[in-house]
Length: 138
Length: 138
DNA sequence: CAGGATCCTAAACGATACTG
DNA sequence: CAGTATCGTTTAGGATCCTG
Image (cartoon, rainbow over all chains, first blue to last red; front, top):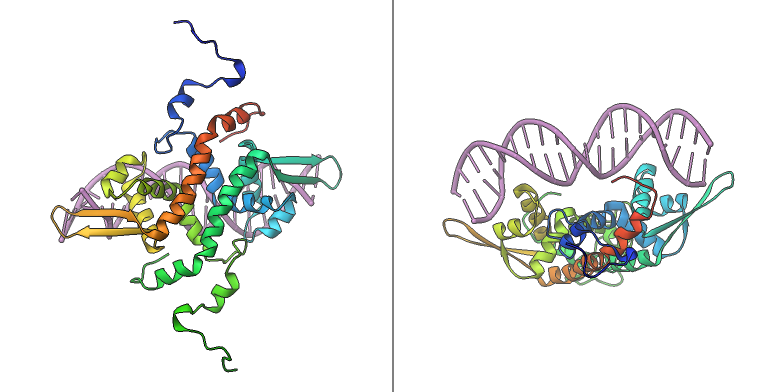
């Protein structure tokens, strides 16, 4: 069955993309993977940090308390691959690499920050609510 | 050193709360834990699902593709403890339990949904961006 | 039906050491 | 400095069985 409406190459969308689009609840929806990167333990913090401007690797490491080299590197790679983070390496010695948000990254980061900010702003309320309950763990 | 400004009991805030307030970047900030629950793999989906109204346990399990009983139960407990989810159990047999969002939960859920919606809406763009890169994994 | 208890695997995570 | 590689630990997560 030939294509009645020829699709321009640059807007190609596969069948599975079309099927899965718009449904995070579906088990195999690719958006779940992206969501995982963005909402991962360190992903959130990296995005919010970069919203404050360009950072070098060690700047991020210092700023984000508790992150290991390995996880920071991995998180940055996820986010770079998803098109949210731009990595610029200057060919000097010692190495100099700068991380920043792409336009796409700024959009997600803003939404992530909105969430993080709300939680910070309501922390006292949340903790107080927890205090009035029968002791549960972790 | 006596307190010059007596603090009303209902606005009590511990020292650690005051110290940690407003700083997700700090390693021991309690907001990180809440953030973990909310942005956890299933937490996101539970919140968005409940934004659509009250659900029973098995309704949620059916709606959220791929979640196991154990993780759904655990996620609901986290969110209940954080004051985002209200659990109402009717003392009948067979058991009947309904989950819904508290007012506090509706506020987080909206922000979580904003993020999820953005990702879904820009999925095609993101996937296309990934396609044009040198192959990376996972 | 709504989970709790148990057992198990896979993945995340962290510490350290090493390299261009 | 900015990582990669390796290894060991911890946690997430899933399957199954069981009970009120």
